[in-house]
Image (cartoon, rainbow, N blue to C red; front, top):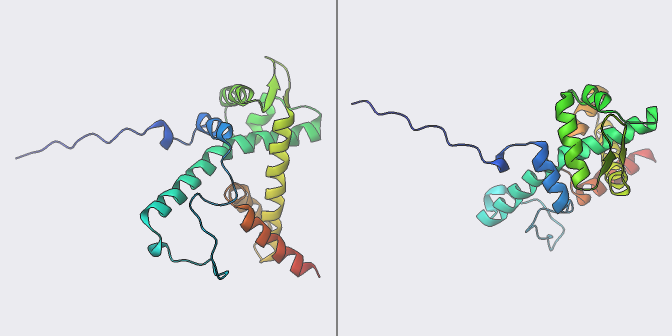
Length: 190
């Protein structure tokens, strides 16, 4: 007897790492400090085996990671816009598309969404500018990137790999982790 395989389940919008989800996450502005439900260790020992975590704690950690992924696109765009303005005096959709390796249409859609959440200002066929909120997000993202990059260099990661890895890691490090990275960097300077 032959049975037919059921069709693959459809992915929900929450499963797609699209720019739209990133903008929604920017509206919510999840805390980058600690994953929800994370409790500070009483004795300073923060190492816990994942198997010891309760199911609810693990779920909260996964939700935190997914939220960071959604904000990653938004942060990459505002950081790129800030870089282009600093280098060229303006940010154009064509330049953003070329630098991020995406289509012009993708940039236009994402910039529209960034406007909706108050991170950029733009008019058709004109340059794109950051609002105060967008500049603040770009600066915070840039600082995180610099700390992660310096940390990777300090522990001996090659320059090319450090640049590539820092680009993704910067969006997923808590303030606590960034502070630890900074302490290690500072300890190696002296």
